[in-house]
Image (cartoon, rainbow, N blue to C red; front, side):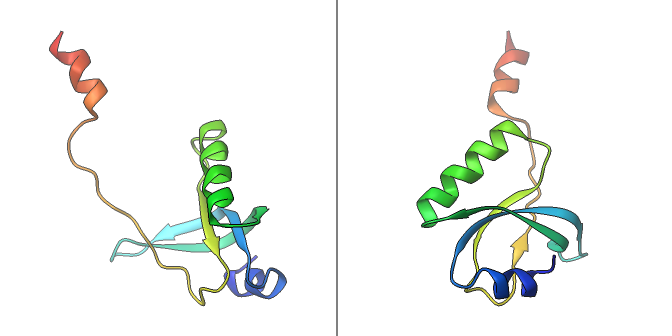
Length: 93
């Protein structure tokens, strides 16, 4: 589905969605070409909890929690520099 279709079928709702097909633009904006609704949530807090649970179960899948009042999705990728702290601690031993 497209975001416009999801907004029509789920008006004024918190959702956990998954990017089925997506790409990143040169300006680091994530464009979701095909989206699946994974869960409908009663509020933002339950959406965050559902997102975290799903992300822990399926770390390689691309989940987002969103509210359908947004006309457009504005998802930006951040470039992480450096190494994770736990990894650095293992190297120092």
